[in-house]
Length: 107
Length: 122
Image (cartoon, rainbow over all chains, first blue to last red; front, side, top):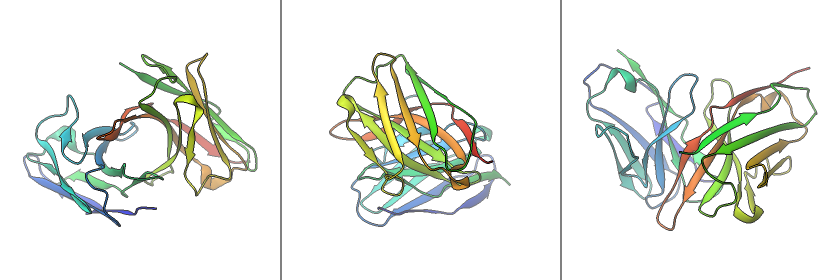
């Protein structure tokens, strides 16, 4: 199985901050990675797919980059509605595997 | 817009079989280009991919669960189902059904159900 390692596991930030979350794959996965946001009691929602493509309807303050084994999700200016848990998910091979999640909380 | 809705018992006894159904509206399970998927989230933990059923009934399972899991589709009802046998407390989780959109260039989970909580307890 491909292991996905996210960092940090937790971050505290203020509204307006620039936030970056990293996901590392245990082997190369080309650009076959997505980023998902999950709010308490809700299902995850796709923000980014194919490493850098913004899902329809997702605000442009979210962006993704990377290829191979290292990927980043950036929120350019954190908004109150962005406080949530973020997961990466690799779509390169089976079984699909998620990162362990990054919880973004209000400072 | 496609919508997915999980249903099934919220409580299952240890060693019994967990059975959940995902009803699909606004789309069809009998269409190519989508993997109809089950994912679970244990309390306070991350997400675990269980497996999928594809157009024509092809399935693929997580090896960690493969000996106990069965995913199937019912095209007449536009549903797909998860069966997990010999459950233990470790199978207590919120179970999500989801649709993975697949193309030659990219895949992603394009739709999710709201999730259903299942507790394994006597």
